[in-house]
Length: 386
Image (tube, rainbow, N blue to C red; front, top):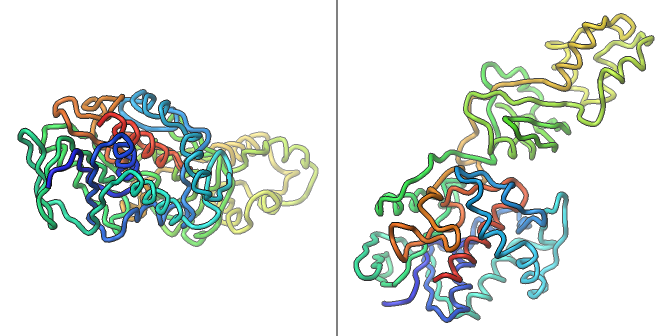
């Protein structure tokens, strides 16, 4: 079978690319190895799909080339996608910080994309495994459901996160086949594992509003204690910037200065740990204070004691050895090198007609809808260039 473009991967980026190509009169074929289209979309956002973020800028992404994403993001914005969502009468709401979620289920976004695919005469073949790709005058793709030829080939296979729903390194294999460089990959938007003994094991499930800093980046949201380390939105955000073996700094009371609070109660006979229970979760204070704070009445604390308390509460540092791995990661950090691609079209510079879009590329967004916006924007860039 001959077609204009073959898109491998029936996720967010692949479907959106196919829609754009189809609107321009291109015959687009989507090959998806899962039996279900858009599985990652369906499970995202707790089943409600955080489909974009109103505050999206290139600064919300991590890449070896931090400027690469600017072009695609500028040409297809969150407002553009919101307009499409509204046209399909999908109800949504802003949860916080520009994060837009479906009021109903994430299936609505998948159905919207499939409807647009039908309108654009896109052909979709689910449950189709790609066995071989060859390049002569055209691309020849041999699959479990036959052989297909096209002038252009788009790789939209995602990264290594969520292997339980079929994620593989297929896209990186295609890049290597054609001599295209890959930036080292690792799990991201992922919980971190404490180095050494975990004295906080018994606190699993406790959440604290904190400011988390790693490198030059700080995020203020909740942290969540686990049996092995820490999770929660602030930790997932920080994992984009954390380096293996590195420390992370925590401000456990970002909205209050602990030295001021203690000094205002300097005459009190209340013990420091009991005082802190009014500011932080009780169980956390019991464990944390016993190991790191002077357990004295407030009226007996010296200036040096208060300095120590200030350091521990506002600048607590903890090292982490590893992440919880691919099965807990929401995205892949790294991927197909942006130096190999056109930022305007997502086409490989070395191989005319070969495109890489979405998570398979070395562009990784923050938590909160940014990775979906990259999928729409990079898919649009390729789709309009095909």
